[in-house]
Image 1 (cartoon, rainbow, N blue to C red):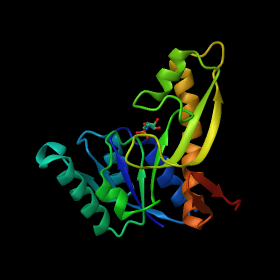
Image 2: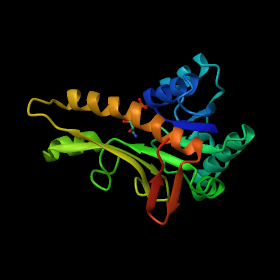
Image 3: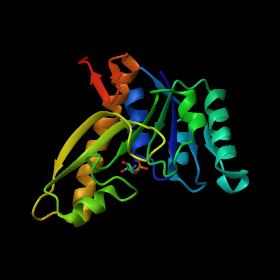
Length: 201
Ligand code: GRF
């Protein structure tokens, strides 16, 4: 499966996906990485792995529709089959979502529908929950809302700081996202309304 990965930041999830593809754990490859931020370190990770790395400047676009159109064009140019949002901090428009139905996925560092939004780890920590976690889901036009593919719980320990909790959440992300993408690439994922079934390998 040909993956196009959308990022805005450091790209540690991107790295875990590149590594899992290289190790043969995912029957696929990352064929393009697109960022809405020029300074996103994930672009360097892509270049280092020999993957086309594209910065699309939202300020150079004529509004959100034009931006999404350019994203779609860049993905189509590489014949992307599955669009992977990995720390991508923009809402994807209907043009991209419509072009890859049930093939646009996102990762969120909390157990959705709890603590949606840009600060899932900190919001859960500040709330004082005892359990939080990671969610991989199909994207739709509302942030953090589409059908859930995979979730894993992470316990909040008595002596956790935000930093130690973040580290454990990211460890889970770097395992759960590649596993979910492996299932998609294998054709082991079926969707009926909001219910997503993932068959064992
Ligand atoms: C991850 O925690 C992801 O769940 C969230 O943004 C973060 C991105 O981190 N959406 P990275 O860029 O993959 O290192």
